Image (cartoon, rainbow, N blue to C red; front, side, top):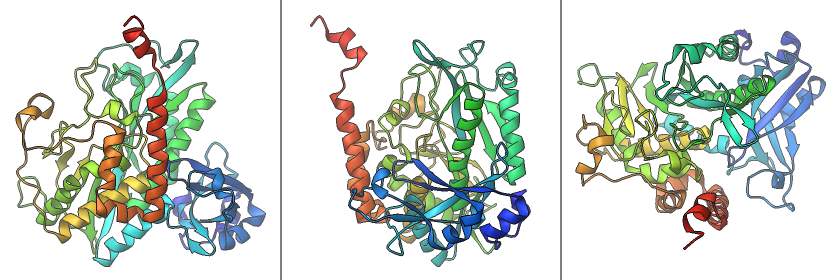
Length: 441
């Protein structure tokens, strides 16, 4: 429905055309929190011009209570009408302070790197594989919502998928209305885990859609008495939630990664971009796997299904899911480092900057490894490993001058401050495992 409207239309014009009475003017903070104000359509002209004002201390942007208001300026091209509340439109926004783009806002950071990409003559297109769990709350904590979903290898299970048909079909129908072109959905490798895929787009659009997708899934799950979780590793014995990003660069409508004469269908430019991602992978971990729980997923011990599906080494292969980077088809590759907690604005900004650095320096990706890295990875002593903790990832980020430059001084300081506090708070906790292990020492 929204996709049929000219993107040049103002929000006032779109409100009239679509019968909207309210707008959710939304932005994303540095920790991935989605913040919004509900604005009557009668006042959206003023907000479109001057922004919706927020007290910045109230969200994770690193500003104190003494800071002036920030203004969320909505992007009319991002408008999505809530199908379950069709008089309300959601719109992604850029943050401004004192009339200037706020440099530490994730969407602004991504747009900054996209401008650098555009200056080189390329556009960055991405798609994301969004995995999530459907859970229920019990007296013992969270559990898989479907009590019949118990198989040790439930991936692609038809019965488990179709028992959630109402929710999955509703999501697909809504995405079709948005013009996202969803094309596959499945039950994933963990009990209670699902994945929906929609067609790739420009990276900023993909990031906006991913933010809205998480909101939509959680809302529709709540309406059904369930909890939808994108947490990287909610259960130690089950596979975690990835958010694998597929990517390519385009030039004048042509895929610059595509070379049909190459065995994998990848151009030399594509391999250089891939090499850049690998060369910055340890620092990228802090943006692509941004929580303490993320490192329960990365390089985890085997699950009940027999595989973690998460990378451990800085390596790439063909259509091989044991590597950090997979080339599943001609003209694109997949980064499997990204998980469900990632803010795609920041993750994609880092991935794009790393890839462009690989192109500028003509980096070599080295030889492709056609091996099961879960089994044989330790045999390749020259391969680096991904960080095993958030602390290690943060230190790697600090040592990566390119990624620190991508974030900018204010965002880098704020992000690291938040994340080091998260690490310290985690370390201060005494866990049930420790009590059971050491109480009688």
